Length: 110
Image 1: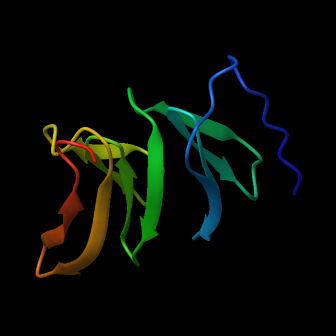
Image 2: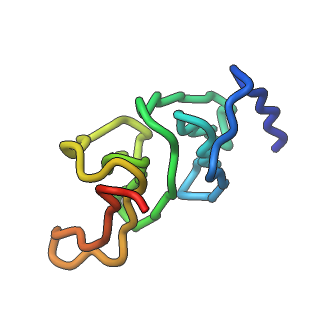
């Protein structure tokens, strides 16, 4: 599978990555996350409203951390929920235990 990604502006983004999760190639770049379904080749784009940070894959869901919140993606690629604003310059997930997400976020850089 080949995915071509083109920037929508001249902005520079700190993080980008790609992971395979179930039937999706997940690409986080800029202020978006793209879920490319590997069998049908359909692409779902979710605009995060802030810079992409990291993707965290689990069996039944995918967590996407942006610079200010966490998004939970269902196994069909739809958004289950998004958190309230947790930080302003990065959200990191360290573990999930019994449905509780643990991590760190930066509120007042540096």
